Amino acid sequence: MGKIIKVLKGTKDILPQDVTMWHFVEDCARKVFNSYGFNEIRTPIIEVTELFSRGVGDTTDIVNKEMYTFEKSDRSITLRPENTAGVVRSYIENGMSRLSSPVKLWYKGPMFRYERPQAGRQRQFHQVGVEMFGISQPSADAEVILTAVDFLKSVGLNDLEVEINSLGCPKCRAEFKEKLKNVIRPYLNDLCEDCQTRFDKNPLRLLDCKVEECQKIYAKPEIQTVIHSDFLCEECKNHYDELKKYLDNLKIKYSENKLLVRGLDYYTRTVFEIKSNNLGSQNAVCGGGRYDGLVEQLGGEHTPAVGFAMGMERLISLIPEIKNELLDGYIVSNSTAEAFLLAQELRNKGLNVELDLANKKFTKQLEKASKVAKYALILGEDEISQNKISVKNLKTGEQTTVNRAEILNYIN
Ligand code: HAM
Image (cartoon, rainbow, N blue to C red; front, side, top):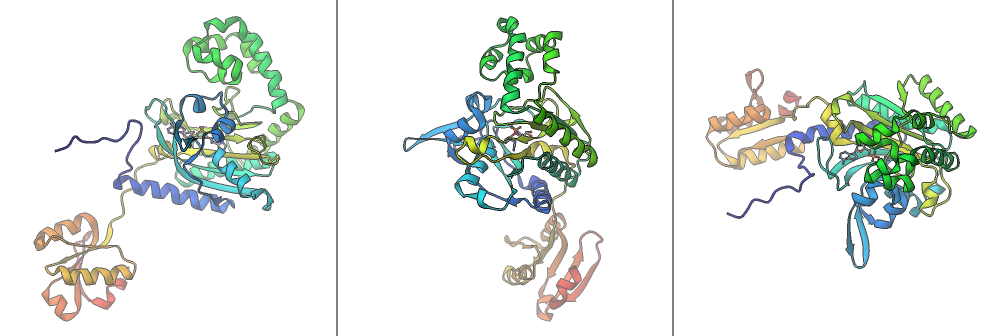
């Protein structure tokens, strides 16, 4: 026997007994997103690496440390670590700016990040998400957050926590970054290695460092004063205030978190996350925000945009288990040939049916039926000769014989 080959670290099989949950979540996504006018888009899992270095940002952990990148025919190719950049590429490449605004797209599929695997964090994971292009007003941010909350409700999650923040526009944020650097500079040598790099390249990311020593430094009063200062310019402040009014009006409960800076570089103004206390340290089910500069940055016309993505594994771990559907019928017969014909007849009528393929004894076939189906469809010699079927309800034990032509009515 050869050595057993195992699944790669940080990846998982989604087994048949779990697939019902995935279908449920995907069906809810399709229904809710369609009801808001989002259309599904499917973009490739591989893209040119530059899309992410320019799109997600080459100072981010995602691009610096976590991408699966390889060379093929002299091109650098990357397995997508997220899908906003890919959707933006497709929006530009397919001339979607010519479509009537807003353009609303949704997607689902696998993403790849080379992170340290732990509960709620995998190297291949799945996201569902939406992106809306063309609207700069905060009503779009509100609708995107509402879509996320409604989708979560539709899968039975009513009490998750919505956190929001505004990162301002490049102009007011630049001033804020300078102020932040000025108060943190005296402690630079005491910061962790990552923060020392972030200090120059991406100072906002200092705020969500998880290292205790860094957190202690950022808790100092003079630094906290800057973090909690009102740095937004008037336009950004109005945008943020209006968003909050919309959320209040929609009765969406939220809290403001000044430390919410997100791990991707493309955000402007609104950022948000939806969290659950039942998820441990990887507690964000959903992350999103506005990215008004990204379309232009990737070669398109200036186009405001906002969206979110949710981790499907994290989402599914919060939903109570759904049992797999039973088959409608399992055919119990000593004649495989006749059972085949009946199975085809019923499948053509829309029923889910299986038959015994191994010439098992009648009692064994009945045992199997009781495990996998709602009805045992018994096709003995008498039934075959009389064109009838004996139907046993496997829940109640009730058994009756019906004409073959009436089986569909009987089961339904
Ligand atoms: P993100 O925050 O990087 O945002 O990911 C969104 C969600 O994907 C997270 O909240 C989490 O639930 C899930 N997730 C991320 N990494 C992992 C992982 N390694 N294992 C399991 N789940 C994970 C984005 O990806 C942005 N593209 C969201 C967006 C769309 N912003 C605007 N539009």
